[in-house]
Every structure is written in structure tokens, then in C-alpha cells.
Amino acid sequence: MPAVVANDLTDGELIRRTGDGDRGAFEVLYRRYSRPVFGLALRRLGDRGRAEDAVQETFASIWRAARSYRPERGPGAPWLYAVARNAIIDRSRARYEPPAEAPDEASPELGPPERIEAGWTAWRVHRALEELSPNERAVIELAYWSGLSQSEVAEYLGIPLGTVKTRTRAALAHLADQLEKEGLG
Image (cartoon, rainbow, N blue to C red; front, side, top):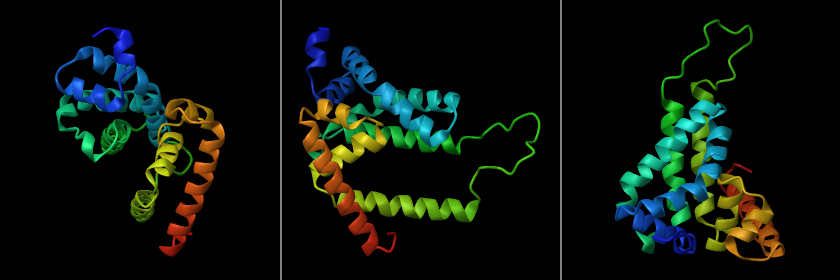
């Protein structure tokens, strides 16, 4: 597939073509998303090597699972980020090699009760995200999961920067209301 044509395709079309074995479509997806997925993985894992492994696992999973993508269930980017989140979670569960010498300070890792609370909170936040309109959810996902600036979100979605700011402000207000109802505010 010519590069110009591949670059004009939506994420969903690229994922479908990847599912059909189209390496060119897969390469375009990689160019579009490897950097944002790396940023997300680095923020979540706190280690460049583990983040790089998570990116590699993400795209290997995309190559293997692209046939499971269903466009009628939503656009391609959220599907791709779900694959990335799973790879990052898997990487965070992978055995972590401790340093050769024990550190003098306390571990920054959360203990089991804190991990349970953080997991519960994350689940409730994701549930609150589902209550947002698709437009509001898109700007939040791109900003917080992909690490894009508001200008980059505007460019990616092809909408004015002011619209991104308005949607972000409204989405955050709706999230705050929803979480307050659930006792997280």
C-alpha cells in the first residue's frame, strides 16, 4: 500500500488491514502510536527498559489480535490503547529484578492495601469515563492516556483548540460530579 494512502486511513481501517496481514498498515499504526504508548508506559512503569518492553508487547499483541477489532464497537484509538494498557499491566506484573544492593530508603512500591485501593479507584474512574459523551471521552483519552497536549489533541481530532479546551473542561467537571456521587470526590 502506498505510504500516502496508508497515512490517510483512519486508525480503525489500519487495524482492520493489519488484521488482514498488511504490514504497511501496521507500520503506519506503529509510527502513529509507538511514541504515545511509550509515554504512557513510562509514566505507569517508571522505567525506560520496562516501558520499551511494554511498547514491543503492545504492537506484537496488535499484530496478533487485530482481527478481533470490531469497528462497530468504537474507533480504533481506544481499542489500541486498551491493548497498550493490558501490555503495561502485564509488564508491571512481570518479575522486577531488584538492584544488586538493597537501597537505604523505603521502597516506593505500594503495599497490598494501597494497591487494592488504587485498583478500586482506577476502576471507578474508568466507569466514570464511560459516562462521558464520546467527544468528551476522546479528548480526555488522548490527553491523559496518550500524553498529547491540547494543541496536539486539536490537530489529531481536526477541531479548534478552543473546542478541545471547552470539551476538556466539561469532561473534567462531569468526571468530578460522577466521582463525587460515588464518594471519590
